[in-house]
Image (cartoon, rainbow, N blue to C red; front, side, top):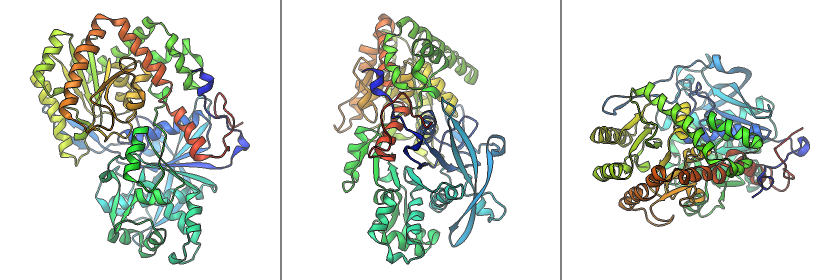
Length: 588
C-alpha cells in the first residue's frame, strides 16, 4: 500500500475550536515522572505524543501521584517488596495559578494543577495537567488524595476518581477550555459525566433531569474501555457512593439511569453517557460486545508512539532510508526496501545495549550470539510468565539440540497481588533449576527506559496471556518497530498483526477457541524447536526477513499516529469536521 494511502487527516485551524480533554488515571510522560504503572499509562502518554505530532488541540488530565506507583525490590529468591518513589514536582513541572473546588463527603476540596508540555515532531505543544490536592486549605487526609496510584481501599479510590473526573472537568473550565470533547480513557474518570449532568441541570432538582439532558452530555464525550473481564471494572457500593458524592448527586445518577444493580459502576456510567465507545482491538470489540450487548462498540486498535519506542540504531537506519517516517509513521511500510544486513547490524547494536544494561544491573554477562527471548508484563497469573517453564527438561533439550537460549524477564506485581508475586518467585526458581544451561535473568523495577531496552534488544518477544484476557497489549508493537518479531498467543492486537512465519509466530488455537494451557505450552515449544531456533541459527537471512516484515507490516500500522487519526475521524470530529487526507495533521 502506498504511504500516501495510509496518512492521517489534515486539519485546518478553522476546522474546529474544540479542545479534546483526554482523561486518564495514569499517564507515562517520561522516566523521571512516576505517574504510571503499566500499559494503560504508557498508551496514554503515547496518545498525547501522537496528538502533538499531528497537531491536534488536545490536553491531558491525570493525577499528580506524589508517591508514584512504587519502586520494586527483588531479593535473591524473587520476593518483591515496594517503596514509595521520591520525586519533586517542582523540579519537572510548572504550577498553574488556576484552582478548582470539588465536594468530597460534603466538604470542599481544593485542587490545583501542574503542567507538563508534550512536544511533537513539528514543535506543536500538548499540555498535560496533573491534579494535586496537597494544599494547606485541605485536611491532611484530603491532601493525600493525589499521592498514590492505585493505592488504598475502595473509599480512597472513589475519592481519587472524584478528583480526576469532577476536579479535572472544573480545572479545564478554570483554564478557559469551554468547548471540550471529553475522552475518558478507561472508567476511572467517568465522574466527569456527573459534572456535565449537573451543568445541564443548572440548579434544577435531580428528578427534573430529562433524556434530552443525557443526550446533550452524551454528545460531549467518548469512552475507551480496556478491560475484557467484568471483575476488572471499577464498582462501588451505593452506600459508599452516597457517602462520598452525597445523596443529591446519587439522585442525578439514578435519574440518568447510570446506576446498575444497586452500585456505581464506572463503566456503566461511561457507556450510558457517551456518544462513542470503543474497544482497543478487533478481538476486544467482540469480547466487549458480549459483555455489553446493549451498547454499540467500535474498534480502534491501540498503537505505540514510534519515535519514542524506536531505539537509536533503528532511528538512524530509518532516517537514512525513510526520512519521512517521523512525521508520518505510515512510511515505515517502506522498510521492506532496507537491506537485510543493515537490519541485522542495527539490531546487533540494540542487543548490545540491552546486554550491557543487564550486566550493569545484575552482574550477569549474557552472550550476544545466543537467541534471547524477552518477556516483560505486569506480573499477574493470567499473563503466565511461567508458561515457558512448563516442562524444564524439554526446554533444556531444545536448547541443547537445536540452539542455545537465554531469557530476560521484567515486570512488577501489584503490592496486593500475592499470586502475581508468587509468579515472580516461580521464575526465579526456574532460573535456579536451569542454571547455566539456559541463563534466565529477571530485571527489577521495570519502567520506561528498561522497557525500551528490552523491546529493542531481544531476538523474539514472548507474550502468552490466557485468552481472551488480553484487551490489546502494546509491548509487541514496540518490539516490531525495532525488528523484533513476536511469539504470541492469538489475543489482543496479535490477532490482527500476525502472519505466521512472516511477522512472527502464533501460540495455540485460533481466537474464540477455549484456551488450553497445555496446548499453549506444547505449541510454544514446537514453534521454538521447529521454526524459530532453526531459522535464527541456520538461516539468519530468513530470520532477518521476518524482522524486516515486523517493521514494514506491523510497525507501519500499530502506531499511535494511525490510532489517534482514527479517533479524530471517528470519535472526536465525526461527520467531516476533520477533512481531507494529508501528510500530517496541521493546524496552521
